[in-house]
Image 1 (cartoon, rainbow, N blue to C red):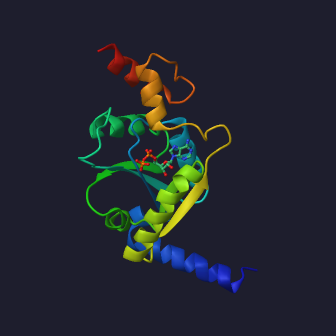
Image 2: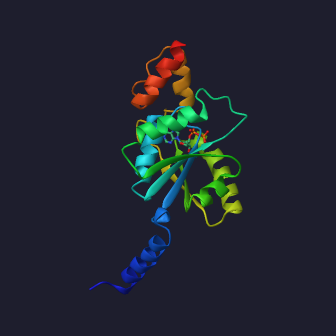
Length: 183
Ligand code: ADP
């Protein structure tokens, strides 16, 4: 026999789906620079999908940050890497992160933590975001063992100096790095 709480949950879920099929299920908003996308990011998305129905990867349009790849290039890398999984999408946003997240139907912001170096900034940002949008939670995933040293910045530096980063980035990014550095 179906328990009452389970029945209630099912009905509530059905109602949401009937209202707008695109907003069915839980959505996490995963913001970042992804310059370039690394295996650390891919891992956070894959594990995020164990908790959320969809992950929206969100590229911040940051005019102050000097990027190696343009927003369009980074968006294309993400699209190519997750082409097999319709649960992952990518967007570019300007302005307040919390507004973009809510506009995408997200109930949570997804972030990764590599260690204490990430903690302070993430703690500040999640506290500020919670103040701005209390209905939005930030969910942190600890880095997968063996990924704690992987960062976009280090990948850019090592690749620029001719080092092999094949184990640190997905194949389309490796190809893009090689092409960029040949120029
Ligand atoms: P940002 O400029 O917002 O820090 P990044 O692209 O560097 O953008 O990182 C986006 C998110 O992914 C951050 O929450 C960061 O901590 C997380 N992240 C990056 N690399 C890793 C990794 N190797 N393991 C776990 N999380 C990671």
